[in-house]
Length: 226
Image 1 (cartoon, rainbow, N blue to C red):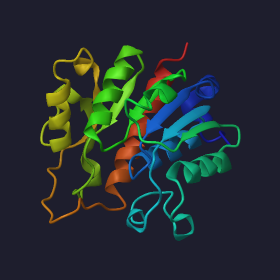
Image 2 (cartoon, rainbow, N blue to C red):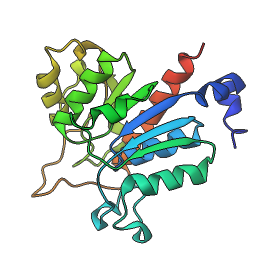
Image 3 (tube, rainbow, N blue to C red):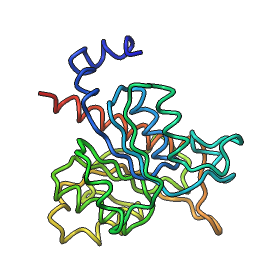
Image 4 (cartoon, rainbow, N blue to C red):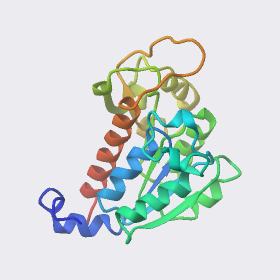
């Protein structure tokens, strides 16, 4: 399945990715697309964590959301999909919410890259600090809701972000932590659109953030190969 990847990654790179473990925390509009791209790129072990079930409101933006999957656990559907793409991939699926009480389950694994795609600010802070403690390469996704421009995402140090309200909250919470200066983030340069009530979303902005995240992760892993 990797004949179209080999000219880009090299055979050595393909072999290296088969040995790598990537954890994606949060399997929504951003995380589900990141996992999809990582599976199709030949990452050997994927750890996915999310406590949610697929809801009708997910149908407009999450790759695992279909009428046939409504009500099912996101990680169960995503694991089945990963293995249908690459049966040789090892998948550890945790149908739980990340936090202090579930931290141990995640970090018993040896992780080569950790991608934070959750919305909860406390979980994001904990993931950033813990990844830094274990010296795990880390990327956090900031806001993807209330936006229309899929081409406005970029990856930059969290400390250099502007405009995004979630990034601002993260900076405030992490600025006195040792991890602060090493945290990389996916951030939109588009100011969020003011909407009434719930956070609005669509089928092209969150997926773009997830695919950009997967691109950064693969590039980082390939550059780190011995």
